[in-house]
Image 1: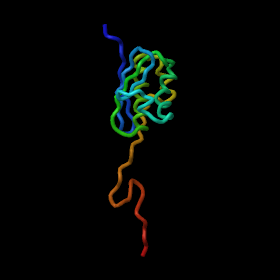
Image 2: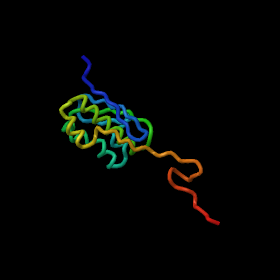
Image 3: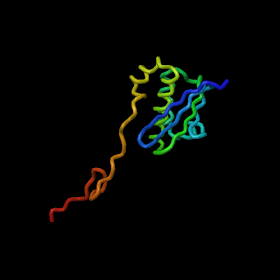
Image 4: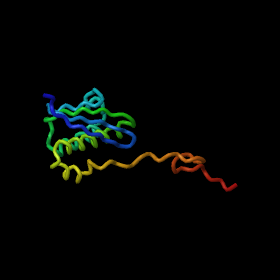
Length: 130
C-alpha cells in the first residue's frame, strides 16, 4: 500500500512552492537539498518551521518542497504557505490556529512595475525649474 501523503501549493511574491508532507522522521528537503543548506539564513529556516511547530508535528513528518521563481525570502514564504495548506489538508482541526497566525493567507504584496519616464516605480528624475 502506498504511504499517505498530503500535497499543497504555496505562493509568495513570484515564488511558487509545491509541498508534500508524508509520515517520517522530520526531514525537510527543499529542491532535493536539506532545508538547512538551501536556506543559508537562520531567519529563513525559522520562517519555514513556524507552521510545523504551531501544529505540533515536529519530527513526525517528512516535508519535501519544490520551489521555483523569486529570491530566497519569497521562496521561504512560499514554502511556509505550502506547508500550512498541506497541514490543513492533513488535519482540518488545525485550520483555526494556522489562520489566526496568518499562515494560510497568501501575502498579496508584489513588486510594483517601473513606469515610463521615471527612474523606478515611484521615484522621479530630479525636477529642474530652469
